[in-house]
Length: 245
Image (cartoon, rainbow, N blue to C red; front, top):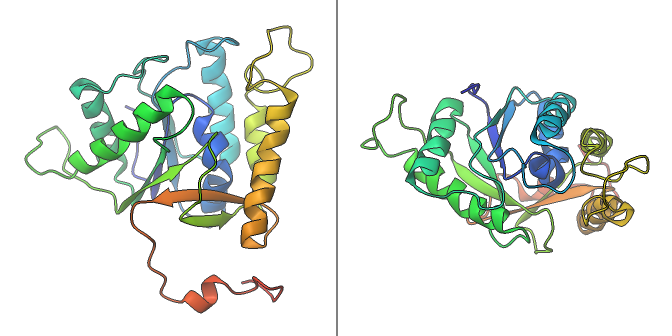
C-alpha cells in the first residue's frame, strides 16, 4: 500500500469525492506546510462516464494539483461499497500506515449510498485502528478526530474553513476529472454530475458557505465533537470587516 505518515488522511468513496467535498481545505493545509494523503475506497467502475483507468489517471492529476503526498485505491467495490470485516481491516491498515492526526470522511447522510456506507466504515475503522489488541503488522494508531464533509446534502456545519485562497486550486483539480464533470466537448451521455448546472453549483455552494463566515469561499465540516478554541476572539477576527490574520 502506497501510504506514508501524514497530518490529514482523506477518504473518498469514489475518485473525485474528496476533491469535491474538501479539496479547498486540503490545498489550504498543504499551503500551510501540513501534509495530507487521499485514499479512494473504490475505482469508480460503475460510473456512467469514463473507465476506471481514465479515472485513475484523472485522480492522480487532481492529487498532484491539490498537493497530496499520495493517492491510494482500496478497490472495495463501486455501487455496493463493501463494509465487511475484510474491508474494515483495509481501512485500519491505511490509518495505521498514515498515522494521521485527523481523518476526513464523507457525511453518512449524503446522497449516494456508497457515501453513506463510507461514512460509517471509515470512522469505525479509524476507531478500531487504535485498539492495541487488534493485531496487524502495524502498530495501533487512533486519529484525534474524524471530520465529515458533504458533497451533495446541505447540513449546518460544525465549523467552516476559509478556502478563498485555494478555491481556484480546487476547481483546477476538479477540472482534471474531464470524464466526470462538465465538458462541452464530451460525446458521453450527460449525467447529474456532468451537467453544467452541477459544476456551477460547486462555486455557488462555496460562496454560500463563505457568506456565513464572511469570506469569499468556504467549506463546511461536521464533527461529533466541537473543536476547542484556545482564542475565540482570534477565531472571529475580521468577521465584521476588520483585518484577518
